[in-house]
Image (tube, rainbow, N blue to C red; front, side, top):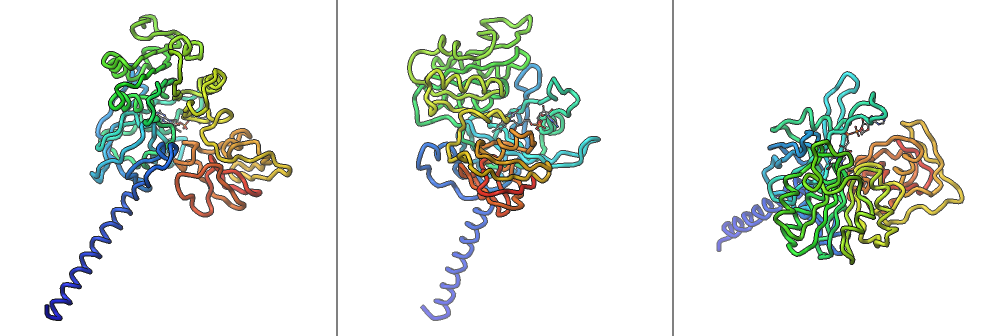
Amino acid sequence: MTAPLLFAAISAAIFVEVVIGMGIAFWRLQYGEADPLPINSEDVATATTGAWAGWREFRVESDAFEDCGRTQRSLIFTPMDGQPLPDFAPGQYLTFSLDLAASPTEPKRTIIRCYSLSDQPNAKTYRITVKRMPAPSTLPDLPAGAASSFIHDDVKVGDLLNVKAPAGQFVLDKTSDAPAVFIAGGIGVTPMISMISWSLAHQPKRRLYLFYGARNSSDHAFKALLEGFAQSHTNFTLNVLYGAPCADDVEGQDFQHVGFVDVALLKRVLPHGRHQFYVCGPPAMMAALVPALADWGVPKTDINFESFGPASSGYIRPTTGPVGAPLQKPLDVQFRRARRTVAWTGEDASLLDFAERHGIFVESGCRTGSCGTCETRLVSGEVRYGSKPDFEVPAGACLLCVGIPASALALEA
Ligand SMILES: Cc1cc2nc3c(=O)[nH]c(=O)nc-3n(C[C@H](O)[C@H](O)[C@H](O)COP(=O)(O)OP(=O)(O)OC[C@H]3O[C@@H](n4cnc5c(N)ncnc54)[C@H](O)[C@@H]3O)c2cc1C
């Protein structure tokens, strides 16, 4: 080979290498790197192979109401980049950044909210189901829920949504064949739909029980889907409870029990032996049922639960990292926006619990260090994390839901 030919061949090889390198870099930038292989069951829970970093744009392809009262709206959406969707663990949620238009009472603003995936994984679409949240009945003058109203009233088929990759640790233990008991209250049924659909498709021998509490037939969601599952899968037992049945709701047909799920009912229906429990529902249900399961003797490792709001405070927590021991010398924590300084004594599992206990309102979402909703500027001081956040918290910021003070703090919140 002549020198010019050799030079041309080497240049071509370098060029090809550079192009491939740039392609890989671009791919990583766009979609992030696949998570490393899980090494223990907790990692299995959070693993979302091929998850993207930051926000990804999706287009709403279709919608449907899941209940007769039309208070629970599903959105099905696909990624604008046309790339396949990463797998997710049934039970995980997506985080949304929603741009709300200005209203007579509120300026234009962006809010972050989490919504559970309400279907089993597939490579093309995601589905969420959102319950319209009215003002509390005791405070009817307050504005209705901002994100849920926006999703019900303003989001149309064809609209674009900014979405973070699936996350969350409230997921079905896929490695187990122990009977699974799903206990859902209201919209808490969404992650169960994902877990049950997946399990029926992939674990045909696993015993599954769903105890689902609704008010009555008007907000009984996924009725046809769940009844279809019960008819076609002998390993799935459906128990629907109505708190306040309508006059024409038929016991034994529309629902199986009147009232609320409690341990007495579980004892009546479930056979003896080990069960893995998955619980998601409104604060009152969670506050009663989760400790009651523990009192019944269910090991903590078999009680999985998720709260869609602040209900997780105060009882068995999903995170087990070190929380502050009672301090001899309390630390001052200043919440600048709230204009409050409160003494941290080490009793709370996180700065978020601490703020809520003292009546200081801070935005929050997942409460497990995933969604970033409670991130706030750390004006001064040092924070440490009882359980590691799922992403790199920027310098000068802190995540209230998993952070605890390592010194006196000044926070922007
Ligand atoms: C992991 C996770 C998964 C979730 N999955 C789902 C799901 O699948 N489906 C679903 O529907 N939800 C889900 N949620 C809940 C969801 O993220 C939102 O919290 C829910 O939609 C309410 O948000 P919002 O913006 O509509 O209400 P917000 O605006 O946050 O208001 C909440 C309530 O507070 C009231 N309020 C308004 N202003 C005030 C005030 N000043 N003082 C006191 N109260 C006030 C509102 O009237 C409303 O009742 C999930 C949450 C988490 C953390």
